[in-house]
Length: 124
Ligand code: HEM
Image (tube, rainbow, N blue to C red):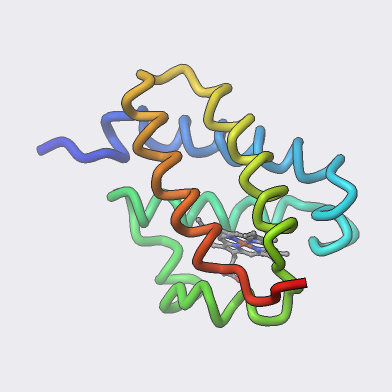
């Protein structure tokens, strides 16, 4: 029985997605200061585990971090529409850089736009 996680290439594809995403975050003037100063590896691991679980892969994220509760976990970050748009712009580059069918990219993109919108917690 196949699922979306497997259809797009499993862990390898998510590692690729997340590494391209953080390469973009690391040079984004609005986003970079919000993330851990030293290195982004921990953040990259957490996002990769979360996305793998969300799209039908191993549930390592919840085993290590508990229930995702993304809104709660983002409450301490100042996420206004500009920050959400910057996050999406980094993710757009990462999704476009994957070697998967356009219809699969569209599916990922629909989720990311919805999720980034739902995490806005400030209007300025
Ligand atoms: C809307 C703009 C967003 C901003 C500015 C933002 C920012 C951040 C920051 C600064 C962190 C802490 C990094 C760390 O883990 O050390 C974080 C964590 C995280 N973010 Fe976001 N994020 C955004 C959207 C999203 C979206 C759309 C998702 C999911 C699709 C997501 C998933 C996560 C996950 C899974 C973590 C780690 C949570 C944990 O286990 O502690 N974020 N985010």
